[in-house]
Image 1 (spheres, helix red, strand yellow):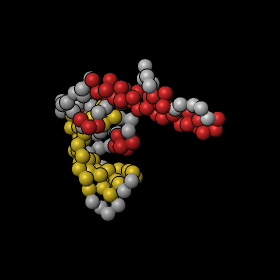
Image 2 (image 1 turned 90 degrees about the vertical axis):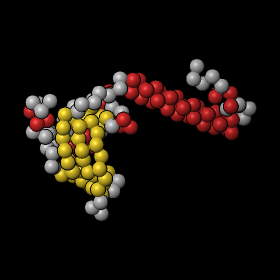
Image 3 (image 1 turned 180 degrees about the horizontal axis):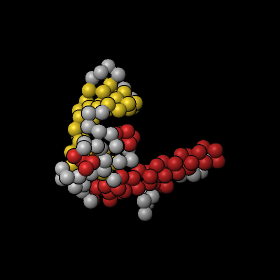
Image 4 (image 1 turned 135 degrees about the vertical axis):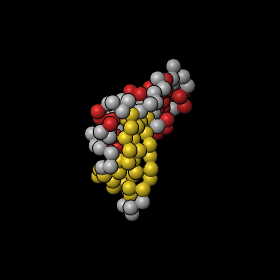
Length: 139
């Protein structure tokens, strides 16, 4: 895999494993290692960072050894310590799991909106049961 020009030259791209240090305002660093993957198969809890995330966008195309400005919360810089070819493959089920989690969150949000509306109607005009909305909401 060292034959790959981008990897052998140490540049960050999709398909690389990257060791970085996040530097905060006080100069303290936090070490992280992750593989950069397409957004569709990303699973950060398993160490796969989506290429479309702000952190990935900040370091894509950068060489090992670079310090890149990156302001998020108290972090001010990302230092790219090492870039190698990724040898891991993301779990194909991660995308489906993420889709299901998003769908559940959207459904829960919609339910909460409907209950708030029902409570508003009940307070203003009375005689409306907002609890009945929750029964069978996901069906």
